[in-house]
Image (tube, rainbow, N blue to C red; front, side):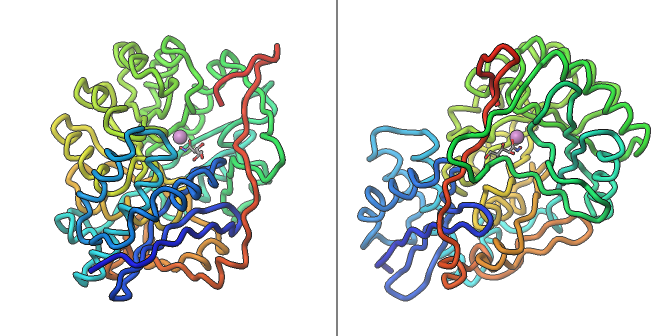
Length: 409
Ligand code: EZ4
Ligand code: CO
């Protein structure tokens, strides 16, 4: 078989997505996700200008060889743009292999290790009643693990807190990227956050009892010492994990955090290759790998990093925000089905408009996600629908402290 076409589709059904569609001479097609939130067109150009010409006439069956070829022949390795582009090719080739074999991709990765993937949902609130309402809603929806984000007195806009009123029954809908000409400026005060958060978790535990798994995302904002203190302060509330407590560029920071707290740690959504995370795993400084198929180079490296992590009892907690497209989500669901050391899958759910563009075979029943048993990844692109939604520039926000200093967002 030969690759005869590779098309880059940019569509914006409520948010931007970049998708690669690879076509073989036998008419088999495969999809890959190349969405890099806020920097989408850079990956589209990388693919169109520099990768698509290299794919034509290649044998789509040779996934490992194609991955190594794209990674090594580029010479300038790693980085989110390069690795999202390679990820899209990798996913599309696994999709094709599955379709040719007549099997879902998880079968090709070793078969199912579980009935489905345990997931966590998102809850947030500007005050406790709103937060409790949001948690109740997620529980009713089937989630047995819930990420809790809350406003902090004195901070106007805060990561992870839905702006809309959380009227009962309304789906939680937090989306950080805004379709604005410039990134939105938010504010931040670490000391106010550290004072406020433990009380919120105490209230949530008292209200919902010991069984509900609770998670929290620190979004890379703390120093190692601040993160260590937060981890200690949250120990009584038995978090499932504390995510991204320190900036991900400096992995040494987690050594200090780890020495001071038994709160489980998760990191990795901005990591691109195993070199970003190998020491965190082998030194057992983290408990969950947050890498996403799309930003980590695809299915091939995600499976490898999890097999490496298994040696150290480190589990998966793949990043599943809405900016990972249904194709990227499917790719990591198949990995999650197959590996032994699966931990928890983040599931934010895509909008109905997004789901009209990406037709999916996934199921979500009583908190368990399953990619379905269609051959390949189980996602098809409805190109007519996709064409209705033109790209719209969107940016992630950024933070400033009270004195005007830029802070990690
Ligand atoms: O800010 O995916 O755990 N989830 C997150 C996300 C990220 C967005 C960035 O594109 O941290 O909300
Ligand atoms: Co995060």
